[in-house]
Structure formats: structure tokens, C-alpha cells
Amino acid sequence: MKRALWLLLIWFAAPAAAVTCENVSYLDKSYTTCTVDPARDNLRLFHRQADGIIGSFRGIEAMPDVAALPFAMNAGMYHPDRAPVGLYIEGGVEAMRVIPNAGPGNFGLLPNGVFCINDDSALVFETMDYIAENPTCRDATQSGPMLVIDGALHPRFLPDSNSRFLRNGVGTTGAGDRAVFVISNNAVSFHEFASFFRDYLQLPNALYFDGKVSRLHAPALGRSDFGFQLGPIVGVVE
Image (cartoon, rainbow, N blue to C red; front, side):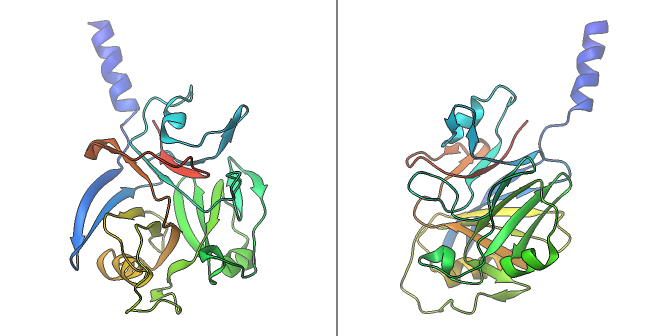
């Protein structure tokens, strides 16, 4: 009897993660969304341990303090050695500085942005706003381009673009109380992908993560993508 009561107390004291993943159809395209409440879910960034770069969802699951990984996704661009291209902060420690200037590739298609995680919030900042405001972020990753900026699509996105890839990214509410991670299940243009965040999800700010190595771990949907070794990863752990 005492053991049963003890187990019941443990159950209520440690609620399971509230992250929810689902498949959504919008304008003849398929997307998978995972919605996270940062005040309840243990949302974190992962890149390396003492013995090297983690590089995969299985690597996170093998960590000694991880009992379950209900959601994970690649989270920002990286160099061939898998070092972050831009700002990277994990557990309050800055491993790479913020990059404010334009450059080659999608990362340098300004404006780009920063995804900032704290214990009770998650926010997407345009990079120059991040520099000006200098917010405290427990974890942060810089990527680009921005998809949605204060309710407007990135000015360089073309409705008739024929550049299409599987793409992934994250959008947040203005209050930072909800983060929605999205991966397309069809090849989509930047304009189509950004419009999904703004018009379907109605999120004011959203940031692109990648379009060639996009990967999702969502065991509730029976999905755990594999392939490329990854750089920064975002995930919810229990």
C-alpha cells in the first residue's frame, strides 16, 4: 500500500512533457508540427559532451540524465566540422558569438535571427534586435533567414520561386509562451514555408533552421529521421 501511494505521488509530482506533434495539410502541402510549452516542457539545446559532438537523436537518448526524448529537431546551421555557424549558447555558456553581417548561403540572407530559450519562455529575435536588446538566454542558436518578422514575411521571399526543399524551423508567440517547430513533408519554397507560420499558425516571428539536413524525432508519430550527423539539436527531454 505504501509503495503504491509513493508511486502515485511520483506520478503527480513529475508530469509528462506536454509537447504535442501532429501532421497538418495546408494549401496542398504536408507539414508536421510539434508544439512546446517552455514553462512546462524541458526544452533544451544539445551540441557536444565532454567526449565530442552528440550529432544525433540517439546520442541524446543515450545521455545519462535523459529518460525520454519526446521531441527533437536539428536547430541551426553548422560548418563541415559541425561547429555552429552563428551564436550558440547552451546552459548559459556561449560557445560561439553572434554574427551580425551578411554572408553566403541562407544563413547570410539577412535578416536572420536567434532562437532564445529560458526556463519559462522561448522567443525568436531578429539578429539586430537581439544585439540591441541583449536578452538573457539560457540556450540560444542563431540561424537564418528569418521567415516571419513581426508579422511580415522576409522581404526577399518570392511567391513564384521554384527553389524547393524539405525545410524546418521554429515560430514563437509574442509572449514566448509557445514554440511551434515545423518540418515540411513536401518540398516547399521559402515563401510557402514562411506563409504556413504566419497565415496558418498565426505566429508573429519565425526562424528557418535548414533545408537540406532537416530531421525530426517525434516518437508519438512513429518517426525518428536518420542520416546526416547533426550540429546543434533542440529537444524536449524528460
